[in-house]
Length: 495
Image (tube, rainbow, N blue to C red):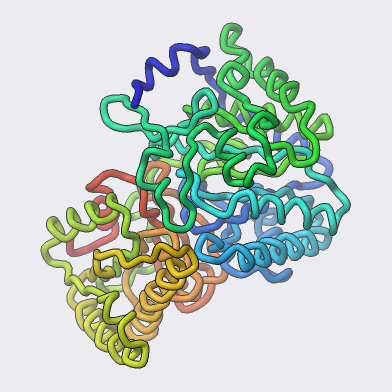
């Protein structure tokens, strides 16, 4: 553990960069034909840092056609999020899904008159199918369009949630300005995606089984990102970044230091310059990268009134669904239940689900009845039992997670069809994904913005049975102990 101020002392000061400078550079490069970033989001929480763009939970060619046309025709931001949910899939399934999505996006682009680039959005604490997903995306683009990827830019930083990369090392920010290497946190012990290295070059070597050597990774540290600090000139940084990755070829891994939003913007200018020079880049990133890459201003947190704007809220209570088991989520749940005394609490007993599958449906029917009855009176908190049941076998752990998630989805969907709630909050990555795509049957939505600064996303479903119901995507590992209560308080009429 180290102090952030001490670690940063070896690097240049922050460079101030207006978001508009990046937006103008992006617009200039797209003047001849619009360019849209297709963001393959391995769980739905990647939208928490962006606003005013489409999100898809299905990826047929027609779905991409809707999204691309919606962006161009309605002046939305030049990015489309696709909810892949691959963090809940095994490697073979994840690979197949990535390939299908890339093929369909490329097939839809010509008719919409757009060019596409690809972003593989994953976890800021380094969990996920890496390098599998970027390998598949690069191979598919090469096969379909004949374009070889020169570099894979890896940017896991998420400063809003306390994840920063300095000197090529990825840290979690703690209290009193401390930094803990992410490999020393609970996330590195993940049953499916665990890892041992916080130094990003060594992480790349570890996760690739040695195929990608640490010594071959290009590290854009803060000396390069902030090269223009002395002159206060972003253009100097942009040139330094583009020069540093000039040698990238054949999907060379490129790691970037990020501590602030201005660092994202400097990186975006450098990547824009590199692509202008002809570099073909693919991105593996945490949530805020896309905001910086397209030059979007940081959207202020939505108020409760803004959350319902354009829709007539239901008189029912709201539904808060908690599936994540990380320590922070459990603390947030405890604060919510303690402070929201009028809310009804309904627990899904995981042991009952796993003990006898033949009786699981009947059991879930009793849960749904309890939820619907309670929604007539006010808000309902549905959570899985807090005892985490897992296996040392990664595949078995995924099967357990899927069983639990399917139960949560069933409860939400049957509740929606019986008595639609005023709002829905889903806590946890896999939980949020499955509730969106299957529980609420959302196919197309618009990301309205964050409910808390930079970390909790509000989607507005534009079709299906959940149309008009604010849907809140809340990652398991973000916020403080009071964050879930804060969001619920904004939306509720009984809190």
